Amino acid sequence: KQWYQRRVAITAGVGRLLQHTSRRLLSTSNKEVLLTYPESHPGIALLALNRPPVNAVSLALGAELRASLAEIKERKSLQGVVLYSTVGKIFCAGADLKERLFIKEEDVPGMVRTFRLMIQDMAELPMPVICAIDGVAMGGGLELALGADIRVCSTTAKMALTETKLAIIPGGGGTQRLPRVVGVSKAKELIFTGRNVMGEEAEKIGLVNCCVEQNEEGNAAFVKAMEMASVLQERGPVALRMAKKSITEGFEAGPIRAGLDVEHECYLGVIPTTDRIEALMAFKEKRKPNFKGE
Image (cartoon, rainbow, N blue to C red):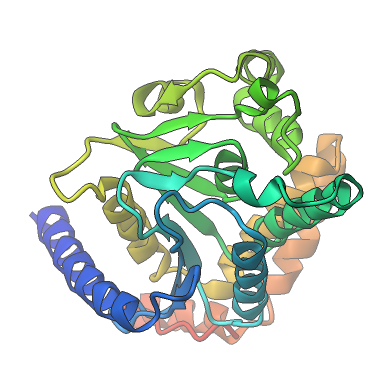
């Protein structure tokens, strides 16, 4: 019963949030990336791609996204970020190929490097990032999603790294992140063929954490992502940051003993925090803790 009441409350909260976001879009429609901190979900940042019709990644969108990521990074009290799209049936169709027609060949490597670093900026955010995929995520769009810690999609989602069809390869980290997510053999298949992966298959192969049935509004993945974010709101901000750092850096460290050393250092980071004392006091007093990220 408590779980059901909680889910109803979260769904209602997401409904109010969508109304707020819609009103904001009316006043910021010229921006290609929207960054908001909703009052209904304190501690959560919403990062939205807002470039109809397909959220193609232009130079302007890339610059706005990097600026937003830099702002988020400085917010010490944040417990999570939700990346999503305001464009129906589309997450991100990848690079703006029309724009690329007018870019000089000698400028392409620098542009691709900037895109790669932008995704790395997101991957290196200290707090968890949840990506909601409610539609098409192609090429650079899927690479962007791969930069998140958690991916949620709907049954209508369609994903692919299509670069070999254009006689190029993924340049935004796709050849490195996809094997780490789905395994080397499956990554080779998907990159070599460039074939589409639908939502249910994406969950089966581990490309996304979960796939949910699409709803009438076309935002089921976003709703699920906000449910997850609501759980993060109840966790200690410093603990979330240290957990992410321990998992990410420990995994990349190589042998498990090296990873355990990383875990030890991260644990030392939570010991002197006031949030840790607050959690102990809340447990003793049988109340919810009031974390401040300190």
